[in-house]
Image (cartoon, rainbow, N blue to C red; front, side, top):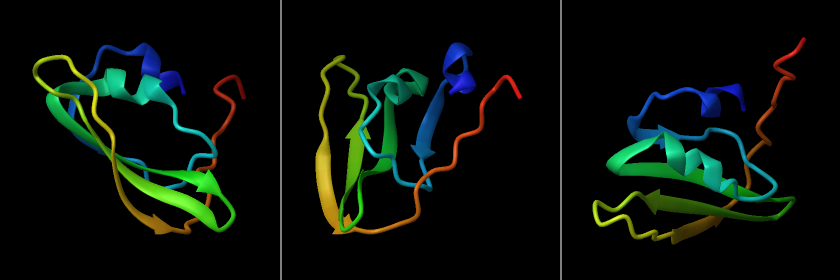
Length: 79
């Protein structure tokens, strides 16, 4: 994810394709009190999660529901 190298911070991020495993690096893109929506898993075992970045610096991850969506297609930044 080349975007993880930048200094941009967002109030909300919605990852619109599933990830096979949760990538905590996405949290670094959030402003304090920002929210991340992501679907994690493969096949029929996917889970929608809401990950808020708390002002206190604490981490919380809420499981919302089970679902099944297409995987996120990542391109190689070098080509």
